Length: 375
Image 1 (cartoon, rainbow, N blue to C red):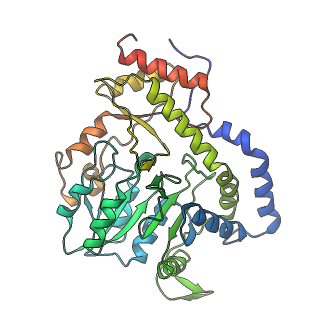
Image 2: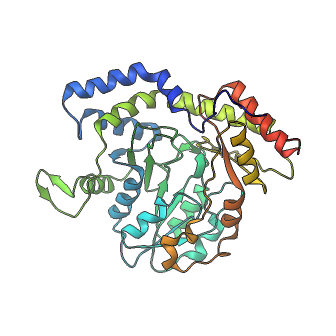
Image 3: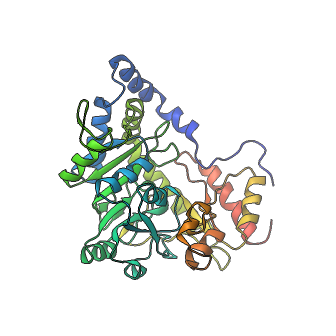
């Protein structure tokens, strides 16, 4: 059966805008009337509120999530000759920023249940040059931070949380971003808290790190036309900050809706030998930036969904250690078998907070018919 009436998107930003248009327009108008477009009051307010939301002491807006990661490495004085451990199964930016500062990305395979870095494999990758671990909370699922922080403490390593997909996710009752030394968030439009363009934010509990990042993100400037170090231009746009202030008000409502949809999927999709559904650990709050399933006939199911008017997405078809841009690291196929197997099997279903019960049922029935071999 083909759904000719409409396409069900991965993220329905149009429907979301219809819900919040009035307060967004009012907030953006305030920025226009203020004439304050860079490093203004909206940005300061957002920094404060996001820091409070994750229970961190300091927040600092950036131009995007990638810059947030790079600024974090720069603030920790990580550069040429240093190594940073991270996962091969994530968006390219996580490794890209390590290379950008001149350090070496060192990959560790993932846990097959959470898709996050496997703590049991980290210590084997530590050398005298290792300075930090970038932990990615992938798809809104939290990594095993208790074990990772214990390893970091034992080896005197810094921990950067790449929480770009996981704002609001929790580990043992504590929200991600404020568990490690620095937390980084992306507000790319499709994120659980998304701007209407690029935007990002850093949180930390260390004043010295905050002050350093504060200088670095504005050309290394501590006072007007005074530059103590080489920085970058990565300031949060005031219009994006205004929009994010509105959407932050709705964040917990939208996260609750995502979790409800995920629960409904898990309860109604056929969980058999042919399909693997995402587990949720007891001590973690998964916010489902993506609802990912695994199956051998992934590509056939994505084609079937498309033919039935249902969007889907594949995250991530080529693990980072096999990317052409990182060939100089000399990793080979087979080095990280769990990440490589997952990359061939995983796919994401629509999980927008705007997804209606009717559309959820349609997605569930379409997947089930395929898995049962009836379609």
